[in-house]
Image (cartoon, rainbow, N blue to C red; front, side, top):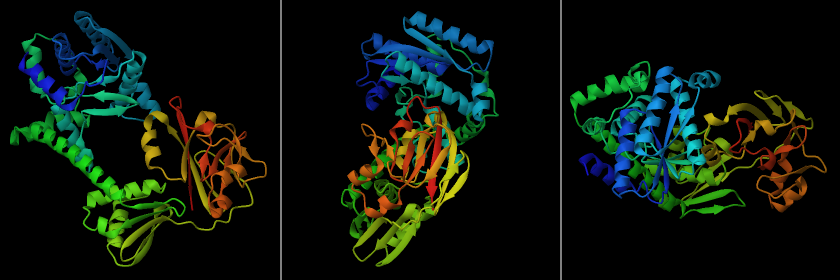
Length: 469
């Protein structure tokens, strides 16, 4: 094997990229990076070092007219020469960018990832391989540093990640761009040049053509150092999360009181970054989202817990009570006097219902991360499939005979019976109210939304409803 192939195989084995994978979609644009990737992986497979099958996937972005079509022809011919099946998809980046009010870069990336994920699903591929390399990694980290980032951002491009429910692997992430060009030259591989890569109106291209060369002039090892930084950041993140979980395991969750108790001795010497992860875990357990939390809140919480006796309130109804030995982080409940009159909610507006302010807006499904929302949301915000909402939205008190289908349940229930079966405290039952459309209850607020309007993979537009005092 050539040195390039040996280095590639070592990286793949070190990261376990192809383990348990039977079929891989190789994302090939026609550029030098993806051409080198498909050629080298094909050679490794022929030599018996890889056992999986390959399918080549190409996305025509339609941004360069005849040149974009020529890229597709080139990739199709490359696949024919290698004896690998190929599938192509065309997307309209300009139209999508205008429609969604996105930059060309963001629109192109979104459509490309969605198209590749769809190809992988249609052709029964377990993963998608992209040709990101060390230089791409360096550009990504520099870009994030310029925008402002914590150590999570310094993790950069990950060897394995999940996007649109599909696993993406990066077998070339251990290679330098110069190694790739040298490999192509040595093997007489031709490739397509994308002239848009020279357009310095794009920040990534300015980093590539101006900032990174300047840094390399000062230190010719900067790319390797940034790559090493990303690896260390990922290791640090894993250590931090593991440490935080060990601390959380020593705490006590009282579901009835909606309270999490931490022994102060356990968190006394906890580093700030671990403390943040611990609080993140506690707030998640209490069903409180992080939207209204800033770094200052976590700093104040830490100072509070270090005191011998203290008490303070935080966003989302959180109250922290500190005594000599323990810190009690609890969801504070207050009596609510609901309005006697129903209120109609127009999407995009904010209305008042008793002590509550209720706001709504529409989101595009492909511009949000549903998984992250579900992970960090609190009980006072929900997302609904916009197409499943019929007619106007009404906010009202519960009525005798109200029925709804709680999300996750097998069918409809009377609201009163649902509340009794859920064994909720009396104040929660009494303070619950209804958000409904013309046909059904959408949300028994703030307890449970309805199954019929949950967001699914087929959802294109989302209505967000948020409730606050």
